[in-house]
Length: 202
Image 1 (spheres, one colour):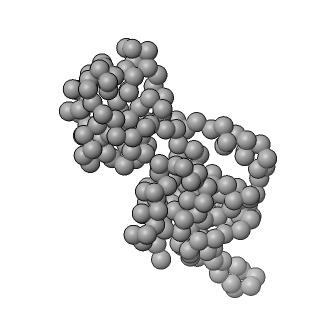
Image 2 (cartoon, one colour):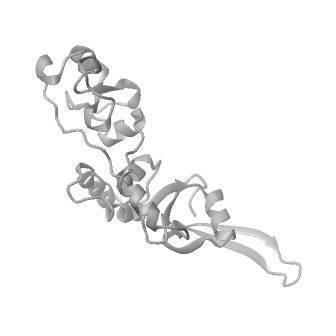
Image 3 (tube, helix red, strand yellow):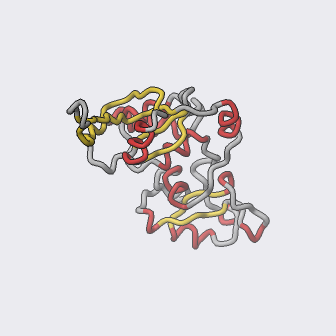
């Protein structure tokens, strides 16, 4: 059985990925009968108290992916138009912890957020104008555009879709969870090839 730190992927009833939850939230959803169906692998088998009348002990099985009841019509539209919040950790994961100027991998402590068109030149702090850069490359580029600094950008920055953002926020994504998220990630997504590599490694 998996350790209790493993996250559960929660879906809406139509199968749209919504969020990561811990085992406590999952048990609460099972207990309040909000779980419509479950798929993926069995993560936890949690035992509760013994029923005074029947003498049976309650058992809740928690799967790696659970779908919950609720209004999906409005939610679907919200998720289609959704722009994820921009933060460094998710940005670094989007870019594979790779400096998009020198092409080297770095730990997150040695990475920084670079604005392709610098803020002082009117650039915005948005997904499509930010890339992961090592501190050396960021310092060298300074307040210039890549063209002005004569530095090549190795990939075009993009805004993650909601399913991509869910993937990026996962701490330790299991193979069945990755496979499920992959079905909701556009074929043209730059993340798709990386996720496929991760799935094949499992």
